[in-house]
Amino acid sequence: MSEPTYPAARTVAAHVRTHFARHHQLARDQGRTDLAPEPSAEVVEGIINAAFWASLRREEGRSPKISLAFVSPELAGQPLTFESWLPLSPAGLARLAPAVERPGIHLGVWPDASGELGVWGTTRRLPPLAFVLEVVTSGLLVIKHRSESFGKFVNVAVLEGDEVKIVDANGTLLPGCPGFVATLLGVDSGSTAAKVNVLVLLAASMRAHGRGGALLVVPSANQIWADSIITPALYSVSPPFSELAELAAREPAARASHEWQEDLRRAIDALAGLTAVDGATVISDRYELRTFGAKIVRRRGSQPVERVLLTEPVDGSPRTIVNPYQLGGTRHFSAAQFVHDQRDTAALVASQDGRFTIFTWAEKDDVVHAHRVEALLL
Image (cartoon, rainbow, N blue to C red; front, side, top):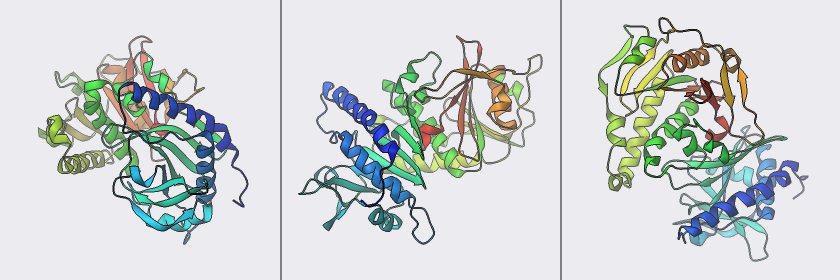
């Protein structure tokens, strides 16, 4: 390539290789034989280099959006294969980008007969643990792998210019980490994985609509949470709307169907769309919609929330105590106050600038815990 080397590519390559080697070994120990190939550090560095310089180019005035997958055509289901492989070059990737920018389409990358990495075609299907690099926008890359959970990839690292964020999967083992944060990090909790994935998909859809929003998850067993909402709410729902709840409760065999997956995506996007309305959307822990556009108020007799524990599941990120106003505006403060007053709830808050925070109550620390997770949702 004529472009210079992107320094962050070499910085992160060894870590990414180690991540995939560890996950492949765990899968093999469980008897899995259908895995994608493990990428070497050289492969990782080469793909990152090409993708980064491609991201800085323009095609018809637009930044390219590309997803690259390290996989051979034989492991890619029903691939679209080029008669002649294309070189893995920034110019070539940028030219191809308009054809493959829709979600779910990946450019397949594999060594050609000479051992050089080339682009052999496109695919919509990837084997488990396939290395994927997504160009989100100019200078912003996300390294991820396909997980076993429906509708999601697990982020491994985020590269933005000279800033590298390496996701710390061990952070999920800290006390008080919500199950759906663990799922975002790729630590599925056995039989509960399908349940928490609903919140993962809701979080991703909330972030995608770009308008900002707040989603409160409240217990089905009681109505105490209503003490923290101004009543009557303008958009109360009666009876509770249960479409998403019914889809989530389907038997595992039914969830394998394409029809169920499409119905779930539509229900997720419809509910996430309600969070764009000013105020908070309230759902039960069974995913029944209770109200949206609700105004949060401090519960009578409760003290204002003054401190929040802030963490981000990224290597080297500290645990810090901050004032809730340092996290954002009124939406963040209201969510922190709600969880402070209603400690068996959770609040998911999306900002218009792409930040995403999940508020829960940390019993051990006796404080509201703010989990910054936008690095997991890109």
